[in-house]
Amino acid sequence: MDLRFQPDGPCAYFISFRTYGTWLHGDERGSTDRRSSRYGAPLLPPNPRFERLRRGRLTQPPTLLGHGARMCVERAIRETCTHRTWRLHALSVRSNHVHVVLTAPEQKPEPVMGSLKAWATRRLRQAGHFDTAVRIWSHHGSTRYLWNEADILSCCEYVLECQGDGPAEEL
Image (tube, rainbow, N blue to C red):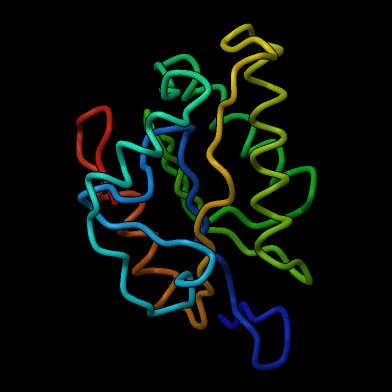
């Protein structure tokens, strides 16, 4: 099955985004910034001093999603995909991040991610999980192009099978 939605374009996107304050620049797991966020670029090395500085700039404690909030985000993402007629291939909502594999014809991945975050935020607030003063998501996230069916299958396997059982498994 050929899922391409543009000639020589991607078949799908792998979109990930984190909750606010849960993975800061300088973190031991590495990080990216605007200058180093190209595909295939290495992560920035850990920098405990910079991480402490970034932690000190947080305007609230890090945001974590409890079980009810995770279920709310999952429903909101499914609802968004149905409403926009995007094909959802895989979804994993964790306590500190979300992974989505989807096909969104004629859409760039950044606005797709923005829409997913906006719908999830609206539903979380409507359900009373967070009030309007709480920042839920970090700025931006990760958007990767999936070029063929093998890429989609591999990414779906990662999202569905490799997230572990703990509440905050990392990438």
